[in-house]
Amino acid sequence: MRLIVTFLLAVFAVTARADDMQTFKNFFQSTTSMRAKFHQTVVDNLGRKVQEVTGTMQLQRPGKFRWDYDKPYVQMIIGDGKQVWMYDPELNQVTVRALDKMLGSTPAALLAGSKEIDNAFNLRSADNKDGLDWIIATPKEKDSGFERVELGFKGTMLQQMSMRDSFDQTTVIEFSAQEINPKIDDKSFSFTPPAGADVLRND
Image 1 (cartoon, rainbow, N blue to C red):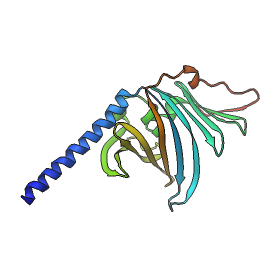
Image 2 (cartoon, rainbow, N blue to C red):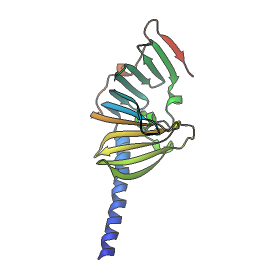
Image 3 (tube, rainbow, N blue to C red):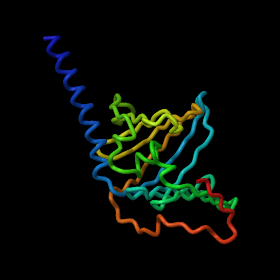
Image 4 (tube, rainbow, N blue to C red):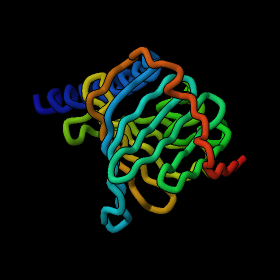
């Protein structure tokens, strides 16, 4: 009887992990747009908090996204499908980069990139933690700037992302008030540098 119970538990675990992976793939195949609030925390390799910010995010696949940071400082990161604009109102400074150089195997590619994420990431299921089902995505490119991204789902909703970079820092993003496939005005993903802003192009 004990062997049967052990076997059944093992089968259940494998099935659950397969379901987690399917949930993950379904999310990216069926989600064409998303809007949410976020709370972002960065800690160093000793577990010390080095940054904490909040804001809102929007995305529309492929390649369009907008992250508006509102506390403790204001900043915008906007991808218009061709370029990524990073605007700091306090400095009145804009940095521009080509989109294909910003996505690739980066965490942004997981959310705003194409649906064929298997081409850029190795994916595997992880153990349930904090009431969430986790998927680990490891970039296939060695110079992506981070080691891996962990995505936590509750049901079909993405609740959290955790990213460990090459500097041994961990960024945790918690999402709330998520809207899946909302209609988003294209103007949300367009950006024109303000008059007098210092524009730096990093091609």
